[in-house]
Length: 224
Image 1 (cartoon, rainbow, N blue to C red):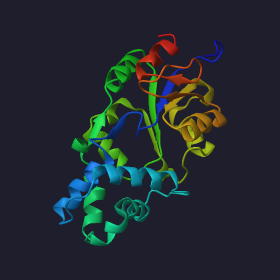
Image 2: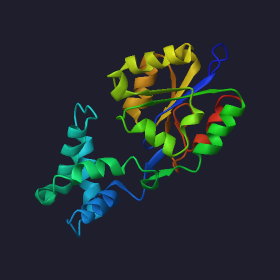
Image 3: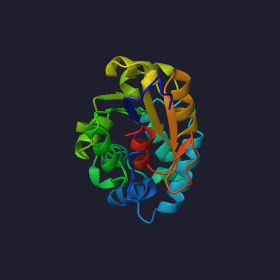
Image 4: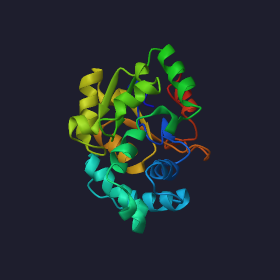
């Protein structure tokens, strides 16, 4: 980090950075489908098709309708078996804390940064379920600012969502480090807006100046 521009705030992505579905998106889909009479849905196949649908989603507005399109694509030929009430049920299921896993490095990192007076923020492409979910997971109190794409009508990698973060933190973006799991949305997007940025790749060798193997590396990166 530049010595003339000390990092005094850290913003974080949510999905894939702080939390991930437990045990997986496909398992949750299969569980809710079984409760609505659609049995023997294969979680592995649901995961595979969901990942493909997510990669090809294009301009995604994070509305319920947009999510339901992805759900139908994940179920493929079995989508016609899903009753109407399945869709709001599976949408609601992802607000419940037991279907999410908070990565083991998250709380120790947030504690360490907060103890040192580092401002913490979230910048996430998500929908209206994010704030209640963060509260249910007892994560919300760590963050001074939470910027959600559905609320501000701009999504990463747009520089606008990061510029809104600047206003909420009251800091120039050159003093903010953003960490996330998407090279395009989190790294390129943040750097394009003037933030420092690092990619989180747990379990992979850290790449100096580019990639972190754990969020626990952040305090040392800031010289704390």
